[in-house]
Amino acid sequence: MPKTVVLVYSGGLDTSVCIPMMREDYGFDHVVTVTVDVGQPAEDVQVAADKAKALGTEHYTVDAKAEFVEKHIFPAIKANGDYEGYPLSTAIARPIISLKAVEVAKRLGSVAYGHGCTGKGNDQFRIEFIMRALTPEMAIIAPMREKNLTRKEEIEYARQHGVPISQTVDKIWSIDENLWGRSIEGGRLEEPNYMPPEEIYQWTKGIADSPNEPEIVAIGFEEGVPVSLNGQAMDGVSLIQKMNTVAGNHGVGRVDIMEDRMLGLKVRENYECPAAVTLLKAHYALEALVGTAAEIKFKAMVDRQWSEMAYQGLWLDPLKEDLEAFINKIQERVTGTVTMRLFKGNAAVIGRASEFALYSEDMASFDSKTFDQQDSTGMVKIHGLQARMYASLTR
Image 1 (tube, rainbow, N blue to C red):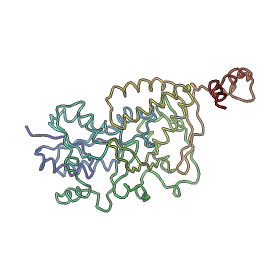
Image 2 (image 1 turned 90 degrees about the vertical axis):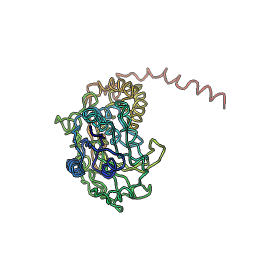
Image 3 (image 1 turned 90 degrees about the horizontal axis):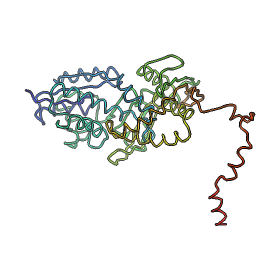
Image 4 (image 1 turned 60 degrees about the vertical axis):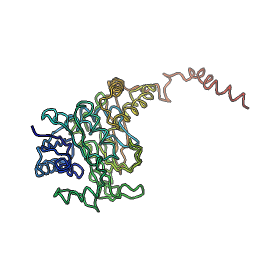
């Protein structure tokens, strides 16, 4: 039986140079490549397949877009998934990519996994967690980490071994895309004070190039999940793709942050997340309408914990499941419509409505006497009682 390794394969620089390395340096005579389609451009998926076959691998392409939306993006929306100011996109895609690689490895009887993650990034944790949790008996090979390679060394290795790549020493950006976001890093983009060139963006227009008139969109939710745009029911994949186009046209969704990675490294990251930014803001607004003050306050802590675990790739951790039990209970009432105005890089909430709204216009209005203002007198008198006592002692 041939010695088989299943390589998580994107078609990019890191994973492409892994193919000859698996044969020459690690002794595998059967390299299987697995590309998981989570919403990257169709041409990129096809290029990866063509490149893998040209490099002599047994290749599999797995269409996981619908599953990615249902089991990864929708939970992220419900949890208002955000890490240090960026909607979790790359992070939540890694578990499903690893899960599909595990499925192929089990089916083919592979003895090892391979991946192109570096030793400086987060993806090594996310990818390997799933593999170790589900197939602890299998070896995991990470050539970039084990050989301590730089991007320039990888490019030179690819040149020497005839591996086709798109990067050059001068244009070394690493791009990762899925339905929920697009990340661009590498080269001068790593410098905190370097202004990103407009050419790195593909999903969003610059402020100067975006329309001079705002666009109004109505987003319908059912139990925390977006289900319609402007009254038209849509499946999850189509809705997110449409929202990426519409919001991106108005320059919504550019995120430029200094991110704290799991290893403690502080790195500069650039993201494009038009649908994510818009839908998360809309979801949060609807939750604020239907949730009690105590629920909203407590859920903010739950959401933060969920987001940190998702960022770390701990998709199978029991605490994450526990948190989701609480989150999903509240989502039973997060049903309604949120109206957004998209204009010059900003997605603003301008209206929200729900049958579960904890709002009474009659009671809140200054022109109504349903709420008897005199009832507040006693509460106001004892408000801050201990603080007032303290103030009297310290005068």
